[in-house]
Amino acid sequence: MSHIFPRHTKSLPPMVSHGEGAYLYDCDGKAYLDGSGGAAVSCLGHSDSKVVAAMQAQLGQVAFAHTGFFTSEPAERLADRLISLAPEGLDRVYVVAGGSEAMESALKLARQYYLEKGEPKRRHIIARRQSYHGNTLGALATGGNIWRREPFAPLLIDVHHVSPCYAYRGKHPGETEEQYGERLALEIEEKIAELGAENVMAFVAEPVVGATAGAVPSVPGYFRRIREICDANGILLILDEVMCGMGRTGTLFACEQDGVAPDICAIAKGLGAGYAPIGAMLCSAEIYAAIENGSGFFQHGHTYLGHPTSCAGANAVLDRLVDDKLVERVAPVGAMLRGALEERFGQHANVGDIRGRGLFLGIELVSDRDTKAPLDPSRGVAGKLKKAAFAEGLICYPMSGTIDGANGDHILLAPPFILSDDQVGELVDKLEAAMKTVLG
Ligand code: PMP
Image 1 (cartoon, protein in one colour):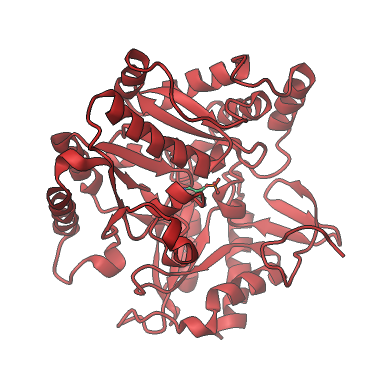
Image 2 (cartoon, rainbow, N blue to C red):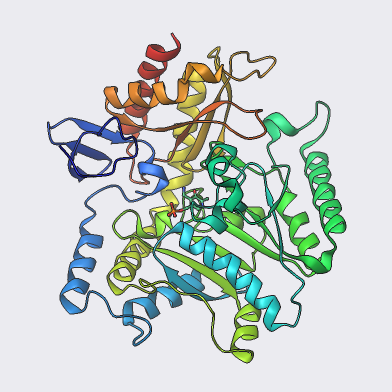
């Protein structure tokens, strides 16, 4: 009997043996092409020798030193590097152990910023129904994923959710993308007016929505309007790039493509690329100054802040992404994968939408392409697809939609940036086989 507490108590998954490049191997020697990088984590693939060497060297030097006593060279270097690469205005880096910690830190920093500024009434958060921001209670409250929230609803702080930017289902027929974005912007302005701008502290969004919807980018101009609205009302813009950041969409920060810079940005997954449990919150000089000139202490913290070994890993990941130009592979390899998906599944009776940016792609499944009616949830297609793909030797990330009851099952693909042309073909072949098994 195992004493592991698995995700599903009734089944234990196979045991992983090792990883190499774009593949993971189980203990029976079966190879799995990592088509989703786990959950959009393994952007470099597995067993990257430079990252392994950097972490081994750091472990030999000093594995851990608590930030209550020390800063460390790898943490300082990581912060400098991230700021040199980050959108204009971001100036300070708070290094944590994962995405939920980064988002929780972001929310608390926003609150403390307004306290330090003498605006204690600012406490409301506006977020979007189609979103996931983490599983800790503050982050969970901010996210809009109904299924994840439901059991814990009585424990969650009040967050005000507005419509997602989800053109496939939200854009009216005849409306241009710009008009659709403007309509959504007006909804946010109305929500702010309803709450009173002086009571609102932050608007929170993923630039490209990941786990709740399968790689949904915004329409052109949407985030620029949101930036304007936040500025006009003195509200902080918090962007959650935990999943879509670190090159996944083709630029190191996803928001670069939307032409906006946030006041606070959360990153994680690709920052450690799976080699280290690490995340980070980046904030503007103004926010930092309010704390520095006020209490001088951010009233928050986690044991593994600035973990030296994790930071050494993240520094090596950034070397691979930036110096070795792996981010530059994302747009062309992503275009090739997207083209192959469109060719293979574009006419599939159950494929409603193929979307995304870079190597962050989603396929939305429907029962009827014309009406966009979702698949019957009782069929459990997402779960079956995950199993069937796994049997084929493909890791992909299918999920059931639970937003507004409107969207249904979808598949998220987020393979490593090192994916070869042949592996693009292999991914699509294996996905097609899984789709045939499940959908016929
Ligand atoms: N935000 C987003 C956008 C995410 O996709 C996730 C993880 N799927 C999180 C936050 C939470 O990150 P973690 O699981 O590392 O706590």
